[in-house]
Image 1: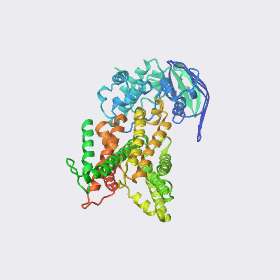
Image 2 (image 1 turned 90 degrees about the vertical axis):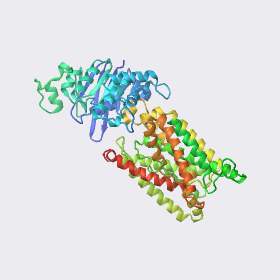
Image 3 (image 1 turned 60 degrees about the horizontal axis):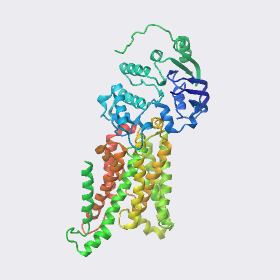
Length: 245
Length: 316
């Protein structure tokens, strides 16, 4: 298990500035990052993964991110970027197997790695696509394959940048339910507030690169969301509700 | 399939030793034929195989690290900028052992320039890369023309070298190239698993524990060393590294454990065949520079790739 601590984090690029005074995330928490486009959600994720360099302190289990070598980071956290691709015709099972790289001994994958990959394929309803080329899949199928790769990494913290983009409602529910039932910490920018409220238990609300609020589900009020998104948010009965069968 | 390909390669090597201006009877060679076989043909055929493997291997690595199916030593400008260094070294009368080193230096400058120009916000744009490669080829060609004009005393050496091909081969050259090839192959093969991850977007690869910048730099330097050493000894032989990684991928999949080996093998096979054709296509013993044959083959293949992957190129 791993704990994340962020202190006095600052990052700037062109006109954009991100500033976070203090955030602590305990192991196993499911944290959604909410905010309008350009509020800094993906930037924050990239900073937490060390893909961008900012000022301040990011530490995992009291060890500064800067001091953690690349290969050790991969055993600490995994990342599903907002846009992910595979060039050249690798098949689905090969892509999912890539997730075992941080655990691979030597220059090839073990039988155990292959067995675990197969289990991830099954969990994400991808077994029938295992021999298909990744580049030939639909957007939603690609997203699920990439998610299987991320889960296959078996890192205690999972960063997911809009995991349900391109997914239909059935697979969205399946994936959020799957994530909710796991022990790992999940930190994820999510655009669908209703889904976020249903499946996450803590919410970081960003506005113009600043942390507007750090709240739990029962503190997530329409007033707070109105302030976050600059639109009038009310709480009522939706026209349609969805429940995974 | 793999064994069949290796068998075809061995038969091609043996057959191509017998083909040329003087046909050699393998069963009862005369003393002259034996001298030709061992002193000229065998080193030449082995040399063309080694150079082909070097170009095929470098193409396989370039295509993956640059995320571009049209990348090879020629389209990235690495070959022409290496040639530029080699020509300047020849023109200035530098000692021959220095020629590949100068070629490596200018080749790396050319490749990194193309790479930096084609990368914006962490993404390599394949179209920009090809355009930057074209510009690099034009600039290198202009400087080479200037060297031919300005260094009159070295003109004949430069022109002879620029023709490319395997006209002058000795065991020393062959050994040097084979050692460089072996070193590069073993290095890449040892990193095949990491190289596979470069097929992912940069953020995914990095989050899996790969130091992408470091791995890419190592790959660039070693692949360009292959190109520089090859170019220094044979001139520019284009498109081998473009064609064979694709053929390898379609036959044996994209896994770099296979692609590195079969791109090298198919590169060797292609260049041995092209060299045999260049020695025998014109009646009367005259030879074509082998680069003409590979350029014709590669040009058609390039157009085919552009046609079949047009959507992907224009839309990123």
